Structure formats: C-alpha cells, structure tokens
Image (tube, rainbow, N blue to C red; front, side, top):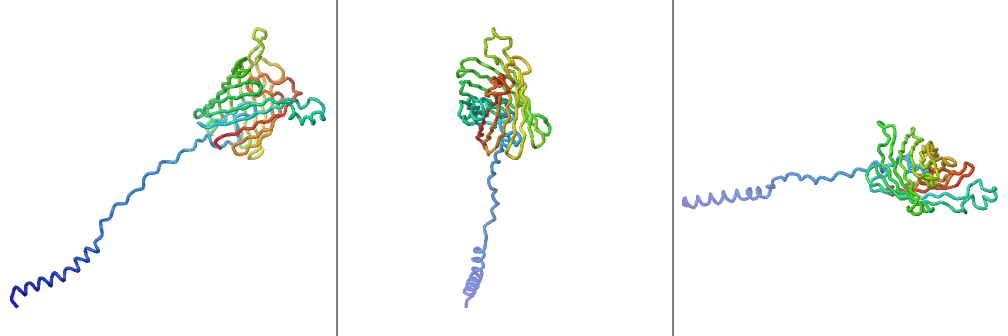
Length: 295
C-alpha cells in the first residue's frame, strides 16, 4: 500500500470514530436555562368601609323618632316606615278597645323615609307622613366613639312643611350625642332648636320656637333584642301639653329592625316631637320598620 493510501485510511478511521461522539454531544446538549418569570402583581383587595360594619349597640338611625349617631355608608341607603295608630289605648272601656283590636282598626299616621349616604359621615333624606307633612333632613357625624374618643357626635339640620311642603315651615337645628356603656346600652342626648313649633300666627302668640332636650336609651337584652326609650322635654320656648315620650321593644333581623312602641303622641318629625302630646293619659300603639340596603 502506498503512503497516500495509508494516510487516507487513517483519516477515514479517525472521522468514523469521532462521529458518534459528536452526534451524542449534539443530542444531549440542553438549551440554556431561562430566567423564571414573575406572575403579574395582583391589585390590592378593596378596603371595606368600616361604616358598613354592624354596631350591636346602635343598630338604627333613630331611637324611635329622635336621631342617633349611626353613620350611613357612602353611596348606601336606608328606608323606614313609621306607623302610629290614632286611637288612644285609654279611650273607652276594655271591650270597646278590644273590638277595635286595640286601635289597629282606627286610622293611623303613617310615614315613609328614605336616606342616602352622600359622603363618608354625611347623610341626607326625605320623610313624608300621611298628614301631608314633608321633612327634609341631613346629618353630619363629626366623630364616632372609640378608645380615644368618649362620645359620638352628629350635627342635625331639618325642615318640614305642611300641605306637601307648601305651608307652615318648621326648620330645626341640633346635635345628637351618644355614649355606649359597656356591651349592653347606648345613651343619647339631643339638644334641638325648632322654629315655628307653634303653628298659630306669630302676632297671636308670645312663643314661636321650642328648645327641646331629647334624651334616649337603647338597652340590649340579647344579641338582637333591645328595649328603647326616649323623651323630649321642652326646656325653653313654646311648651304646650306634655313632652313627647316613647318606649318600645325592637328586634334586629339582618338588615331589618322591627320595633313595636307606645307613645303619648303620634308625631314623628322633629317639629311634631317638639309640640309634644296632649296628655299623659293618652298612649298610642305604633311600630317602626327599617331596612338598610348594604346588609
């Protein structure tokens, strides 16, 4: 064999020996590792408005007719029905009262109320009774009771007018102050000035305004049952008859509050409360039903 043939044979053997190793290296070679991708950041969960949380000692915006310091969450709303039967429970003998089903068969003063949370701490609403009185009201809650604040305070402004808000206007300004006592009670004071509490012409009367000092309590019997009581003595100004008083029993059921009450007057607007009742011998059966539209 010539030298050239020997050299060609050596080259062919070397290439043949190296080819499987080169092919295996290509097959076993792995692509470079890719950096781990981070999942997209999730937006933070929306924070629940603390005004939507149930306050077990203050489940409603009123005691019976007088305001509390309960806050209405922003852009939320609530509805209330008031009903005061027109026959006094002391009118006539027991048989006559029973035949009238304790006043339920008699006429009644009925009111419908709607309120709306305009902004945090500020609410406004409208209330109409079937004697054609319309009341517009607003309340701004300056502060709520907490560990550092001993009281809840709300500023109140309202005006009502008879004959579908076309006559005999009665504006009112006041403050609602609340204090929760332990886990069982909330007490209230509501100093309120009411103009035109006396509907007689001003030239015929000496006093046209009333200044009332509302006082109230809500006592918790168990988790959802309460005793309520309120009074509105007139401390200055027009002071006819007797001061408004109400006591009752109420039940909290989800977003509803059902209240059965007994009052010495049928008035439920602030000016009607300021006018009081005729006598403490006349007590009227009634009820309130309220519904909150965020629970």
